[in-house]
Each structure stands twice: as structure tokens, then as C-alpha cells.
Length: 300
Image (cartoon, rainbow, N blue to C red; front, side, top):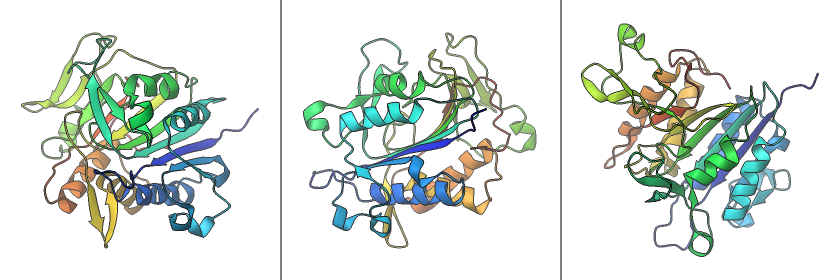
């Protein structure tokens, strides 16, 4: 019987020299790398890293030669997505992290409620174009085998439904009390009806069905913001970092990995609002698992 494995793909793009260059995406990748190797026991040899940086200034200079780093071109990103999910077996755990620019383009196949596809921007997007969420779903989600679990973080603008997953939960309103938490459930009728289960009187909260696309594996995506919103870099101890990547790793470590999906999402929201001065991000979870219990402890 083949043993289960852990694999990860981490992507950070600062767009050096661009008018809208970012500062914290490489730091995000290093923070996530440290988190999954120290706390989740991901083998270094099973981690792919894509960064647009010079080797002599690499945030991985202390492990130079041990960790191969490739450029986050469109081809490399799509090929690496395929690498992440290939040969997956039941019980395998995969981790995907993207920190960089996100955008939106007009939806051409009618599968988006708001009329826009979400995109990520590879380092060569000006030449080869953006990567649309439909492409991400095709390369990263649909090939997942039954019993494989993919946990992902999208720390970028317009990332809410960046994987085109059928169910969404948004951390809006006050943190639910224990009684209200018991009402948080995924509800769907095949993913065709745009059904929404709300918490309290605000119908923008809770789980909503946003896509009819499915795959055999289980996918859980933590997005930095909603589709219509933006994400920003923040300064933590003088170092630029993505607000969502930082919140995720810090809260998980503080709770020693013992925290529910609901509590993590709300604590991430509160952490983001504490460190941000202008932009307000509302993180959210999306999944393809209609039976996911948001009040259960997260497992990787």
C-alpha cells in the first residue's frame, strides 16, 4: 500500500520594475514555506517555488542550492499546477499559495454570476496574458483524484472565487456565537440554484452557491478578499507582507493548528483589519465539498 504524500506549490511575484510593483510577495512565500515545513511536515523536496527575484537577493539565500527556484512565467505556473496534482492518491495533502496581482476580465462562457472571470498575473502577463480562473480550475482542480485534499491561499486582489468552486462562506458581520455557529451549513441543490444560507438578517453572510463546477478531490480555498475587492501589502515589524498570508500563518501557529474554519476566518478578518489603515478586506472560504463542516477543526 502506497503511503500518503504532501506536496506544495508556492508562488510569489513582486513585479520588480513595474509601475504597480509589490513588496511583500516574496516574504509571503518564505513565511508560508516556513509554516508548512515546520508545522505541517511538508518535505522540502516536495515543494516547488516560483519567484521573480535575483538569486543574490533571494529570501531563500540561507538554503541556496537546496531549494530550486523558477520564474513565475505563465507556462511555469500552469505546468507547476499540473505537477502539484499529478499522481495523487487518496489521503494525499496538497498546499497551494499565490501572492501577487489579481484582476478580472469579462466572462466569456457564462459561468460567473457577476459577469467577470477572476485572474492572476504571471510575471510575463504583458506578453502571454493573464491566467483566468477557468484555466486554474482546469489545471489544478479538475484533475484531483478522489480522497486528495488541496488547501490553498490566494493573497491577491479579486480572489474570492479564484478557483471557481461551488460554495462560498464570507466572514461578514460579528463573530457568530455558538448557537449561530450551529446554523452554518453548506446548502446546495446541485450547484445550479444560486441559493444562499444567511446568518442573522444580513443575507450577504453565510454560504452561497456560486458555481456548478466540481472535482473528485476536496478543495478548500482561503481568499484574501471578495471578487470585487482588493488586497494589500502591510508592514509587520518593518517588513512588507500580504495581510492574508500573515494572518493565516500567525493564527494557525498561535492556536497550534487547533482551530475551526469559522474561527480562523473571523480571526483572519480581525487581524487584517488591525494591521490595515485604508483598505478593508473581507476574507472568505470557498470549497467544492458540500458536506464540509465549518465548525470542525482544520486538517492538512
